[in-house]
Length: 193
Image 1 (cartoon, rainbow, N blue to C red):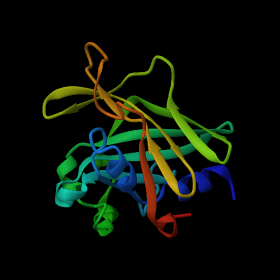
Image 2 (image 1 turned 30 degrees about the vertical axis):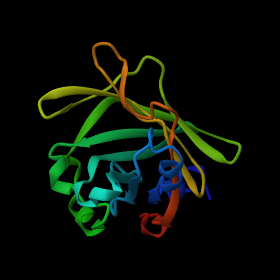
Image 3 (image 1 turned 90 degrees about the horizontal axis):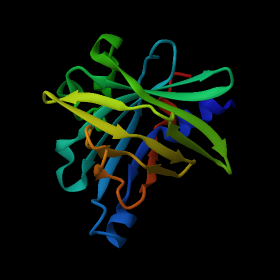
């Protein structure tokens, strides 16, 4: 099995940070994170739909996005896309049949929202390229995030944090270290391999 397939299989799943939220309730909200494979390829590549929700408000899922995975000259790369209308696919983490309707026309390419992904010590590590700025528009305002993750077969660590686009000071997300998600369910069987 190649690295790209392994990466996609490890990412595909439903995750929770319940243990972390119980241990460090002051810093980490108890979240559920869905990484659902798109049933169709995006530009010929495997792609993962992601969204998350506070476990107390699962119906209010947020941060809908798509991560397209590709390999270029032996380098694994992740490219994020935003939804033109995020509400259109809200809840697809719990209702994956909604994802059959996703087309490239529903998505907005996000320049600067690219991750270089390496493999070391039994896990994949993804980080933004130096100097890149991942910016997007939401509710008529410009937002900015610093992206990064680590993943192995059972755990997903999110380093994502929102920053003020003007000062680049962190304002939400992984402010006190990564969100540590344990995989509760795999969706690897749904990948269009």
